[in-house]
Image 1 (tube, one colour):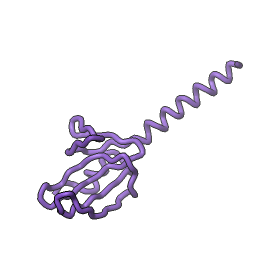
Image 2 (cartoon, rainbow, N blue to C red):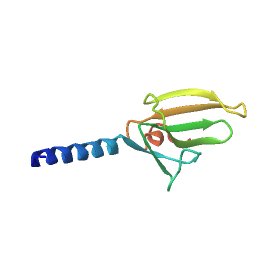
Image 3 (cartoon, rainbow, N blue to C red):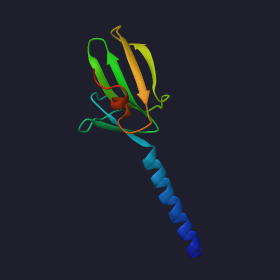
Image 4 (spheres, one colour):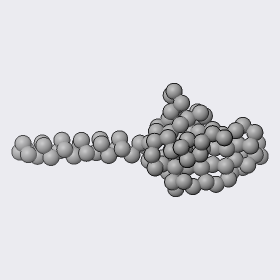
Length: 104
């Protein structure tokens, strides 16, 4: 292998490492789950979304989600207890879930 091939391979590895790091977004996190760990109020997701969940009795919670949602989108979902929960997602920047939907 020619030395320039090694340099090209190293450059590709560095580029992939940088791109994968950029794809991760950090989110405010107040609610852990089986798939989400909050560390000092922060969770991180790659290619996913930050979420804000507004529950009528439990209040506002923030977390990460492994699937990407349309940035700034919101929808309602009925919880297991029958409560209507508003769920909003974003992935535009770190902590977008708190900056777009601050705690009431």
